[in-house]
Amino acid sequence: MLNIQHLCKTYPGGKAAVRDVSLRVAPGDIYGFIGHNGAGKTTTIKAAVGLLEFEAGDILIDGVSIRQNPLTCKRTFAYIPDQPLLYPYLTGRQYLDFMADVFEVPRDLRQRRAGELSETFGLSDALGELTGAYSHGMKQKLAIVGALLHEPRLLILDEPFVGLDPEAVVTLKNLMRELCARGGAVFFSTHVLDVAERLCNKVAIIRQGELVAAGDTAALTAGKSLEETFLEVVRHGEPDAAGRGPAAET
Image (tube, rainbow, N blue to C red):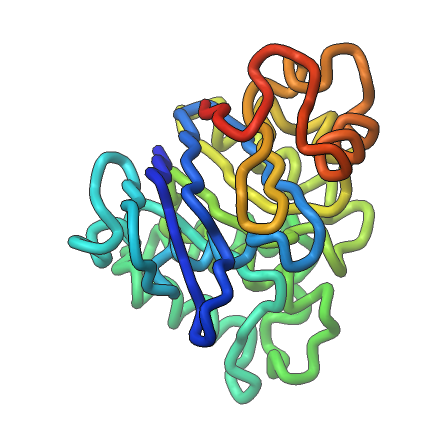
Protein backbone atom coordinates (compact mmCIF):
# COMPACT_ATOMS: atom_id res chain seq x y z
CA MET A 1 0.00 0.00 0.00
CA LEU A 2 2.79 2.42 0.92
CA ASN A 3 6.33 1.88 -0.29
CA ILE A 4 8.93 4.49 0.65
CA GLN A 5 12.13 3.91 -1.32
CA HIS A 6 15.40 5.56 -0.27
CA LEU A 7 13.73 8.86 0.59
CA CYS A 8 16.03 11.87 1.04
CA LYS A 9 14.87 15.35 1.96
CA THR A 10 17.12 18.36 2.63
CA TYR A 11 15.77 21.74 3.66
CA PRO A 12 17.19 25.10 2.52
CA GLY A 13 20.40 25.77 4.38
CA GLY A 14 21.59 22.21 3.98
CA LYS A 15 19.82 20.50 6.89
CA ALA A 16 19.19 16.84 6.00
CA ALA A 17 15.78 16.08 7.50
CA VAL A 18 15.44 12.55 6.08
CA ARG A 19 18.32 10.41 4.85
CA ASP A 20 17.79 7.26 2.80
CA VAL A 21 14.59 6.11 4.52
CA SER A 22 12.98 2.95 3.14
CA LEU A 23 9.97 1.09 4.52
CA ARG A 24 6.96 -0.79 3.22
CA VAL A 25 3.42 -0.82 4.60
CA ALA A 26 1.48 -3.83 3.33
CA PRO A 27 -2.29 -4.42 3.21
CA GLY A 28 -3.48 -5.33 6.69
CA ASP A 29 -0.68 -3.44 8.45
CA ILE A 30 -1.14 -0.96 11.26
CA TYR A 31 2.32 0.55 11.10
CA GLY A 32 3.60 2.89 13.82
CA PHE A 33 6.28 5.49 13.08
CA ILE A 34 8.07 6.74 16.17
CA GLY A 35 10.91 9.08 17.03
CA HIS A 36 11.83 12.21 18.96
CA ASN A 37 10.60 15.67 17.94
CA GLY A 38 12.55 16.72 14.86
CA ALA A 39 13.57 13.16 14.02
CA GLY A 40 11.95 13.32 10.56
CA LYS A 41 8.51 11.78 11.11
CA THR A 42 6.40 14.67 9.86
CA THR A 43 8.79 15.35 6.97
CA THR A 44 8.48 11.73 5.85
CA ILE A 45 4.70 11.81 6.15
CA LYS A 46 4.35 15.10 4.26
CA ALA A 47 6.54 13.73 1.49
CA ALA A 48 4.42 10.57 1.38
CA VAL A 49 1.18 12.52 0.89
CA GLY A 50 2.60 14.90 -1.70
CA LEU A 51 2.94 18.03 0.44
CA LEU A 52 6.75 18.15 0.28
CA GLU A 53 9.06 17.70 -2.65
CA PHE A 54 12.14 15.55 -2.07
CA GLU A 55 15.52 15.26 -3.73
CA ALA A 56 15.99 11.51 -4.04
CA GLY A 57 14.07 8.27 -3.84
CA ASP A 58 10.43 7.62 -4.56
CA ILE A 59 7.19 6.94 -2.71
CA LEU A 60 4.60 4.56 -4.14
CA ILE A 61 0.96 4.49 -3.08
CA ASP A 62 -0.57 1.19 -4.14
CA GLY A 63 2.18 0.91 -6.75
CA VAL A 64 1.79 4.47 -8.11
CA SER A 65 4.44 7.17 -7.67
CA ILE A 66 3.32 10.21 -5.66
CA ARG A 67 5.82 12.27 -7.66
CA GLN A 68 4.55 11.22 -11.07
CA ASN A 69 0.82 10.73 -10.43
CA PRO A 70 -0.17 12.64 -7.29
CA LEU A 71 -3.90 12.87 -8.08
CA THR A 72 -4.19 9.15 -8.68
CA CYS A 73 -2.45 8.49 -5.37
CA LYS A 74 -4.60 10.94 -3.44
CA ARG A 75 -7.78 9.14 -4.47
CA THR A 76 -6.46 6.06 -2.67
CA PHE A 77 -5.44 7.43 0.73
CA ALA A 78 -6.58 9.86 3.41
CA TYR A 79 -4.20 12.14 5.31
CA ILE A 80 -4.89 13.62 8.72
CA PRO A 81 -2.27 16.09 10.03
CA ASP A 82 -1.43 16.66 13.67
CA GLN A 83 -3.20 20.01 13.58
CA PRO A 84 -6.60 19.76 11.83
CA LEU A 85 -6.86 22.48 9.18
CA LEU A 86 -10.53 23.34 8.72
CA TYR A 87 -12.36 26.29 7.20
CA PRO A 88 -13.57 28.30 10.22
CA TYR A 89 -16.53 29.90 8.42
CA LEU A 90 -17.99 26.60 7.27
CA THR A 91 -20.27 24.56 9.46
CA GLY A 92 -19.31 21.00 10.19
CA ARG A 93 -21.91 19.77 7.70
CA GLN A 94 -20.64 22.14 4.99
CA TYR A 95 -17.08 20.96 5.59
CA LEU A 96 -18.12 17.33 5.15
CA ASP A 97 -19.99 18.23 1.95
CA PHE A 98 -16.86 19.99 0.68
CA MET A 99 -14.70 16.94 1.42
CA ALA A 100 -17.22 14.67 -0.28
CA ASP A 101 -17.22 16.96 -3.34
CA VAL A 102 -13.41 16.85 -3.53
CA PHE A 103 -13.45 13.05 -3.62
CA GLU A 104 -16.60 12.85 -5.79
CA VAL A 105 -18.56 10.85 -3.25
CA PRO A 106 -22.17 10.32 -4.46
CA ARG A 107 -24.84 12.23 -2.58
CA ASP A 108 -26.60 9.21 -1.06
CA LEU A 109 -23.33 7.59 0.03
CA ARG A 110 -21.92 10.79 1.56
CA GLN A 111 -25.04 11.38 3.61
CA ARG A 112 -25.02 7.85 4.95
CA ARG A 113 -21.29 7.81 5.69
CA ALA A 114 -21.28 11.30 7.22
CA GLY A 115 -24.26 10.42 9.40
CA GLU A 116 -22.80 7.14 10.63
CA LEU A 117 -19.31 8.48 11.30
CA SER A 118 -20.54 11.68 12.95
CA GLU A 119 -22.74 9.63 15.25
CA THR A 120 -19.85 7.30 16.04
CA PHE A 121 -17.67 10.23 17.11
CA GLY A 122 -20.47 12.07 18.91
CA LEU A 123 -20.47 15.01 16.47
CA SER A 124 -24.01 14.86 15.11
CA ASP A 125 -25.35 17.68 17.27
CA ALA A 126 -22.45 19.99 16.34
CA LEU A 127 -22.59 19.70 12.55
CA GLY A 128 -24.69 22.86 12.25
CA GLU A 129 -22.10 24.96 14.10
CA LEU A 130 -19.18 26.83 12.55
CA THR A 131 -15.97 24.82 12.79
CA GLY A 132 -14.20 27.93 14.08
CA ALA A 133 -16.12 27.46 17.33
CA TYR A 134 -15.05 23.82 17.71
CA SER A 135 -12.61 22.69 20.36
CA HIS A 136 -9.36 21.07 19.20
CA GLY A 137 -10.79 17.62 19.88
CA MET A 138 -13.95 18.34 17.90
CA LYS A 139 -11.89 19.63 14.99
CA GLN A 140 -9.79 16.46 15.08
CA LYS A 141 -12.92 14.31 15.04
CA LEU A 142 -14.40 16.24 12.12
CA ALA A 143 -11.15 15.95 10.17
CA ILE A 144 -11.22 12.17 10.74
CA VAL A 145 -14.83 11.92 9.59
CA GLY A 146 -14.08 13.99 6.49
CA ALA A 147 -11.03 11.89 5.67
CA LEU A 148 -13.01 8.64 5.85
CA LEU A 149 -15.94 9.71 3.65
CA HIS A 150 -14.43 8.35 0.42
CA GLU A 151 -13.55 5.04 2.09
CA PRO A 152 -9.76 5.24 1.57
CA ARG A 153 -7.69 2.08 1.39
CA LEU A 154 -4.75 3.73 3.18
CA LEU A 155 -4.79 6.05 6.18
CA ILE A 156 -1.75 8.25 6.82
CA LEU A 157 -1.92 10.12 10.12
CA ASP A 158 0.42 12.39 12.04
CA GLU A 159 -0.09 12.11 15.83
CA PRO A 160 -3.78 11.19 15.43
CA PHE A 161 -4.57 10.67 19.12
CA VAL A 162 -3.47 14.13 20.32
CA GLY A 163 -6.48 16.08 21.58
CA LEU A 164 -8.94 13.19 21.39
CA ASP A 165 -10.89 12.13 24.45
CA PRO A 166 -10.54 8.50 25.60
CA GLU A 167 -13.77 7.39 23.92
CA ALA A 168 -12.71 8.91 20.60
CA VAL A 169 -9.29 7.25 20.89
CA VAL A 170 -10.98 3.85 21.24
CA THR A 171 -13.29 4.65 18.31
CA LEU A 172 -10.38 5.62 16.07
CA LYS A 173 -8.39 2.51 16.99
CA ASN A 174 -11.41 0.35 16.16
CA LEU A 175 -11.82 2.07 12.81
CA MET A 176 -8.15 1.44 12.05
CA ARG A 177 -8.58 -2.25 12.79
CA GLU A 178 -11.73 -2.45 10.67
CA LEU A 179 -9.99 -0.78 7.73
CA CYS A 180 -7.10 -3.25 7.92
CA ALA A 181 -9.48 -6.21 8.24
CA ARG A 182 -10.93 -5.16 4.87
CA GLY A 183 -7.48 -5.21 3.28
CA GLY A 184 -6.52 -1.58 3.88
CA ALA A 185 -3.53 -0.25 5.81
CA VAL A 186 -2.64 2.45 8.35
CA PHE A 187 0.63 4.36 8.75
CA PHE A 188 0.83 6.84 11.60
CA SER A 189 3.32 8.68 13.76
CA THR A 190 2.91 8.79 17.51
CA HIS A 191 4.68 9.59 20.76
CA VAL A 192 2.32 7.33 22.70
CA LEU A 193 4.46 4.21 22.78
CA ASP A 194 2.14 2.01 24.82
CA VAL A 195 -0.65 2.63 22.29
CA ALA A 196 1.70 1.81 19.43
CA GLU A 197 2.82 -1.37 21.16
CA ARG A 198 -0.74 -2.63 21.63
CA LEU A 199 -2.13 -1.44 18.29
CA CYS A 200 0.64 -1.86 15.71
CA ASN A 201 1.76 -5.11 14.17
CA LYS A 202 4.78 -3.24 12.76
CA VAL A 203 6.80 -0.23 13.88
CA ALA A 204 9.71 1.84 12.62
CA ILE A 205 12.01 4.06 14.66
CA ILE A 206 13.62 7.13 13.11
CA ARG A 207 16.50 9.07 14.66
CA GLN A 208 18.02 12.27 13.25
CA GLY A 209 16.53 11.55 9.82
CA GLU A 210 17.71 7.95 9.61
CA LEU A 211 15.68 4.79 10.04
CA VAL A 212 17.39 2.85 12.81
CA ALA A 213 14.87 0.02 13.31
CA ALA A 214 11.88 -1.39 11.45
CA GLY A 215 9.90 -4.60 11.47
CA ASP A 216 7.32 -6.69 13.26
CA THR A 217 6.60 -5.22 16.67
CA ALA A 218 7.06 -8.51 18.52
CA ALA A 219 10.37 -9.27 16.80
CA LEU A 220 11.60 -5.72 17.22
CA THR A 221 10.96 -5.58 20.95
CA ALA A 222 12.15 -9.17 21.58
CA GLY A 223 10.40 -9.49 24.93
CA LYS A 224 11.02 -5.92 26.05
CA SER A 225 8.50 -3.10 26.05
CA LEU A 226 8.45 -0.80 23.05
CA GLU A 227 9.47 2.03 25.36
CA GLU A 228 12.60 0.13 26.44
CA THR A 229 13.41 -0.77 22.85
CA PHE A 230 12.93 2.81 21.68
CA LEU A 231 15.21 4.23 24.35
CA GLU A 232 17.87 1.63 23.60
CA VAL A 233 17.79 2.35 19.88
CA VAL A 234 17.77 6.14 20.03
CA ARG A 235 20.52 6.27 22.65
CA HIS A 236 22.86 3.69 21.18
CA GLY A 237 21.72 3.18 17.59
CA GLU A 238 22.65 -0.50 17.75
CA PRO A 239 19.67 -2.66 18.70
CA ASP A 240 20.65 -6.16 19.66
CA ALA A 241 17.88 -8.26 18.12
CA ALA A 242 17.62 -9.71 14.64
CA GLY A 243 15.60 -7.65 12.20
CA ARG A 244 16.61 -4.36 13.78
CA GLY A 245 19.19 -1.79 12.82
CA PRO A 246 19.78 0.99 10.33
CA ALA A 247 19.42 -1.24 7.28
CA ALA A 248 16.24 -2.96 8.37
CA GLU A 249 13.35 -2.67 5.90
CA THR A 250 9.94 -4.28 6.10
